[in-house]
Image (cartoon, rainbow, N blue to C red; front, side):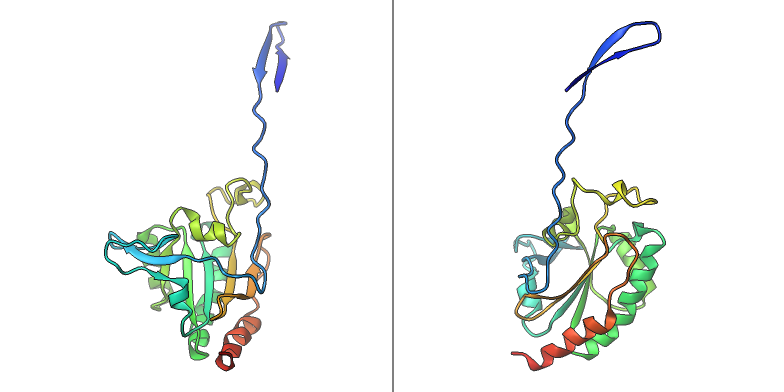
Length: 205
């Protein structure tokens, strides 16, 4: 598309405006949906996610491996959420021992660096597994990250590429049992509902 602009001296110039890339609405996983496959592995000493099972150290584990014996509480987290971040982290920290006591497991995926992950672990004072979601692969497949619909474009105070605050409970059948996606940064996960879903898997085959 072309526009002609006339300045105060009467000079006319023509500029071309590129059409804005079409926004693709995120498809957030719903209860009952099959959780997308991903892998956890170590790459040069860093704990990262991957969409393939290839690993030089042959240590890759898939979500299928994780779910073989226990349901999974999967949380996406980012320090760059500002004042929202510590609130979400506090919920996860409180949930962790309760989830474990009920026979579940909790995994945090973040876009933070390895150094920052180590700092978060010290802050949590727990051995919760925290993995760097490399290139946002898992967040994108779970519908909580999109390049064409960035959070910084609609939430004040955020300037980085981040994923949406979210938490999922995934049953041993790899189906989503609970989903929390806070697009407006104004809510918290329902801990009672999360723990109920984890507990219910004690009686499911």
